[in-house]
Length: 164
Image (cartoon, rainbow, N blue to C red; front, side, top):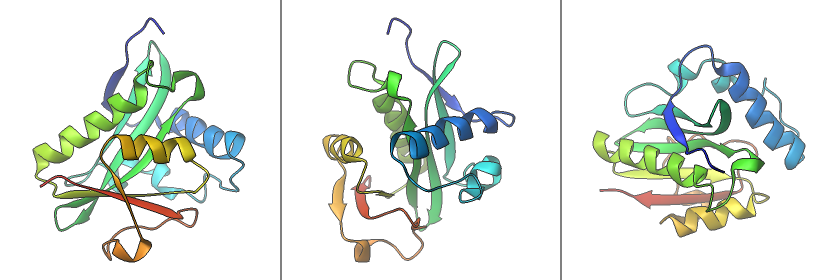
């Protein structure tokens, strides 16, 4: 990988490539029975994510979409980390794509005064579990989530990171 990762906020008109990347990973790699209709947030990213302390970012290498990450403001100075996906060819510590995306989201959250970030994921994303733990997230039981946390039907593991 000789091109560096560039992370920038989502702009309207990019929803098609975002949906293609995410569905390819969810369905193609992990065999999850999930569709675009199951993820209406991706049809209206500005109104769902880019509000208050939330945002949505894309990572690129050259012109290629390498990954995505989002923060959803869930109130009370808390955010949910969502839509963290990295294309297979852009994964790994050497590529640095996931780390760049997470660093961007965490820096944004700290600048906004967010006190903690929560996330849910499927038990199939084992590499993601290791990545979150390596970057300071702690696994918690579902019962420890804030009431405002938007649990997805595929979520079975939950993590948090205090920022305050």
